[in-house]
Every structure is written in structure tokens, then in C-alpha cells.
Amino acid sequence: MKIRESVTHATARQLALAGVATFLGAWCLLTYGGLMPRVILPSPTQVLRAFPYLHQEEALVRSACYSLYRVTMGFAISALVAIPLGLLMGTYPKVKHFLSPLVDPLRFLPISALVPLFLVWFGIEETMKIMLLFVGTFVYLLPLVVEAVEHVDDVYLQTAATLGASRWQMIYHVLIPGSLPTIGEALRVMNGIGWTYVILAELVNPKYGLGALITVAGKRGHVDWIFAGIIVILLIGVLTDQVIRLVNQQLFKWNEE
Image (cartoon, rainbow, N blue to C red):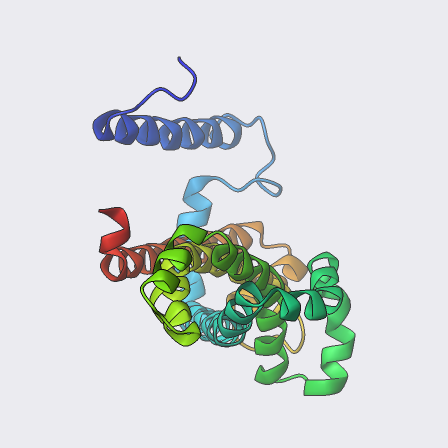
């Protein structure tokens, strides 16, 4: 292997398949070979059998839809707030320096510490869960948006100013288009972060949701249910990530060219 050597698409697919096969092989060896107790690590067969049971008895599809709705709402609100605010902070350094002492420390805030506070503010229903997911993604998305705006090359701004562009035209025709591809990639990252917080958001008043299902499974000692719930979260996360990637490709074809 060479440092940063180029890899063809065919080789990349083969390596990916080999990685998955290696993981599954190790899993089968540990469980079917009796090297790991199945109460700790369930076998692939146990996990597969858990899916129809969870679908019929534990409303797996409904739980997945609830979780998808909560993550999507928190993600959407985060984008609606962070993108305009980040564009403003990245465009005007004075605004950035004014808000930085308030915004920057939020990246170090443990989101779990907000649960008791949000319970007081928003109750135990959907609003609390969505707001928790909103904050969990917002604190990471905002700095990425600011950075995306700041990394637009000054040459473009200088060229626009030379051509007589107004301040609003430089923002609308230079800064926003120049930063949007990077912001689109940041949104992919935030989608993943949203799914990492869904378990925490659904711990309170667990009715429906994959987090609630996993919590109940842990209390009952059904490790196979936990694995099944995690797999569903991973699948939904990967699918939504691919959707955002395809949207970015369609919106920003000019950037790839």
C-alpha cells in the first residue's frame, strides 16, 4: 500500500465487500462458535428473527417513522436557523465577534445536561424531543456555516467589487453560491449527528421511536432487539445521507465541474 494512492471504483467496491464479509465472518465465529455468550452478543440469526417480531408486536415501522420525523424536524429547524445566522457571521466579522462569546462555548455543552431543563421548558411530548435534536445539531452546524462563508476566496469578492457590484450583490452572487456546496456537505454531517442523539431524545416518555424501543429492549434484556433497532437506525441514517448527497450533486453540479 502507498500513501494516498488512487483506488479505482471496482477496487473500492471489492474492498468494501471484503470489509463487510470480514465483519460478518467474525460475528458468526464469535456467536456460532460459542466464543461469546449469546445473551451478550446475539447471533445474526437471532437478530434477523427479531425483525418480524418487532414489526408485529412492537410497532417497528411506526417507531422508525416517529424517529425519522423527530430527527428531520430537528435537522430542518437547525438548518433554518444556523444557515442564515452563519452567513451573517461569516460575512460581517463584527457580528461574528459579537456573537462568538455566546455561540462558541455551546460546542462543549453536553446535550444530555439539557434534558432536565428542556423538560421544564417544553414538557415531555414531541416539542422537547425535537428541540433537543435541534440544539444537538445547531451547535455543530453553525461554526461549519461560518467557516464555509469565510473560506470563499477574496479574489471573487474583489472581482465583483471591481465590476461595480453592490454589497448585497456580492453577498447574493458571490458569498452565498461560493459557500453553499460546503454547507451542503455540512448538512450531511449534521444528519448523522441527529441520529446519534435520537436515543437520548426518546428516553423521556418513551412511547414510539427507535430510541424508545431500544430502551425497552435493554430493560427487558433483549439484546437481539437492541441490535435490530441499531441496524434500523444505521440503515435510515445511510439512506438519508445518500438522499442529501444526491441533492447536493444536483444543486451544485457547477462546483464539481
